[in-house]
Picture 1 (cartoon, rainbow, N blue to C red):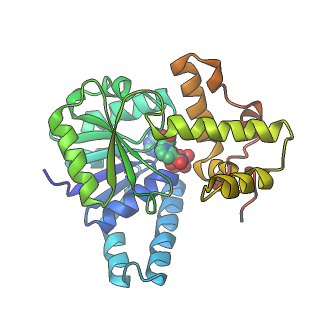
Picture 2 (picture 1 turned 180 degrees about the vertical axis):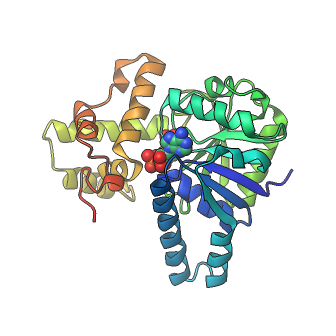
Picture 3 (picture 1 turned 90 degrees about the vertical axis):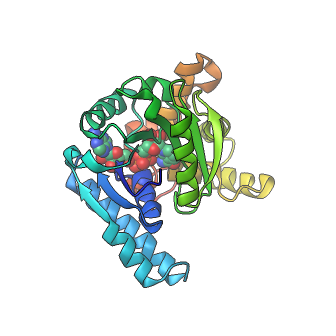
Length: 283
Ligand SMILES: NC(=O)c1ccc[n+]([C@@H]2O[C@H](COP(=O)([O-])OP(=O)(O)OC[C@H]3O[C@@H](n4cnc5c(N)ncnc54)[C@H](O)[C@@H]3O)[C@@H](O)[C@H]2O)c1
């Protein structure tokens, strides 16, 4: 089964990137969000990213136009009726995702595969919400989606071999390198990455070094391309907090408790790049 038509739920940091790469790969995309403003912002971001790719001569102007022509935006879930695959990339919140998945499930055809881009929640638990859990899978993209080569593929307990095969074929279709991971909070990469970022926030909170020096230290001392605090701003501090809370709860282990500074910044609305202020400020 080759994927021709997908829907992406959520036009935020991840959703607009997923829409962009799928449209560039020739797939028709319906981008869905709750509000027109979120859709406008998502399309503006992906259009700017495509323009940058044209300027860098990675794609030509026609590729950009063709990709944009393949993307439609809507707040109406009823339009998911004909898609081959839905990728849920909405806010990291278990109850919200369950609600969205029920909504998706009520409109899609029985041939449709439903995927979640969750960073940390249980694929098995989310699969249990839909009527055909065998056709449910975790497709965990990395941020920024157009640049990051990895696609973690997570099977829930219920995921069928056929669904996994389609997910592998999709990875090839969109030029991502698939890695299989078992269902466990944070799967593999975030299980390692997010506690490291959380620790960097503890280090900042304890006043051991400035944000800039923590980041410079990890860049120059560990050869990381971007420091952990700048990466937290890129991920979104609300998403980081949701991930750490889900680790803390899922493993029932205090070593995963989110840093109080992270909680306070989220309470203040300092969410990183998406709000213009996090550990750094952005235009
Ligand atoms: N940010 C990252 O680095 C990253 C990386 C990999 C995976 N993820 C995961 O991707 C998902 C999305 O994260 P994000 O960073 O893009 O979040 P975000 O806050 O940037 O965007 C979330 C979007 O979901 C929309 N939304 C909320 N409720 C909705 C609904 N009922 N229907 C449709 N849209 C709805 C919001 O309006 C918003 O536009 C989360 O599960 C997150 O854990 C995030």
